[in-house]
Length: 341
Image (cartoon, rainbow, N blue to C red):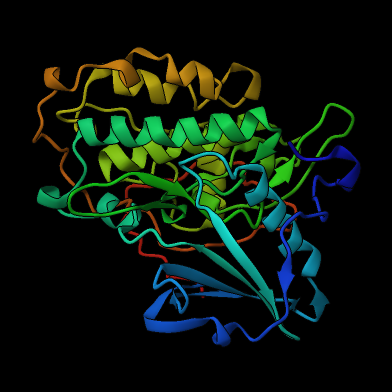
């Protein structure tokens, strides 16, 4: 468990147990193939450990961002990974290296890629409901472990859930703890951060963050996995925020064609404006939907994949107050946001 004495006022932890190595990274690892991913301040590459031949994912994180020293943010990410080390559904941290400009996290390589790819796939490649039940259960087991250890992820989305293999469908690994925070009973954490489509209402209104903040994101994530649609995505960020604040969600039979009513009830138990009314991770694990016998479901039925509200493959950090408009707008217009890099 994380040491609360090492936590600062906004839930960041900068005391770590992992030894940071300063030897040249390429002395011990070979970089192979194409990049696995890239963001504003990080790039992920596949690497092979020379001594063992084991394959890992090396995450190269810039220490200076927009002219500021962000080494503490990276140490916080390492601390969160350490807190989850014994859970099989959280990506495992192998080693850490540091150069003058970067910190390199050597992580377990989840070869199946992001579940985002299946979320936006055509029907024949999309998840079945039985698939989603199995994967959602694994996600919740990982999140339940984090919450018991007072860690909130704060950026749960399809791009941050990886698969050990895509075909056959493997197990999940929760990744990217760059926004994660530690909670305790003595202090409140208020942050404007996350990815627009998945953030909870309390984030937008700058109210205290809690474990329930993750549970909202799991509700959105489950909706996307089942339908291939993003429930709150608007024509722009302001419309998206308005949809979130008003919980404008389409639960129509057209959207959930071929999906059980228990699945809809599961999502509804999470998408409440008041965090106190949301199911906890343990509540979810006991929900009838996650305990459904897969043989009672149609193993090939997937809902039609509409194009109007495809989830955006983007990662945006929100760090300014949000001002919501007082009017309502339609969200059934094709919208293809650009990926931010």
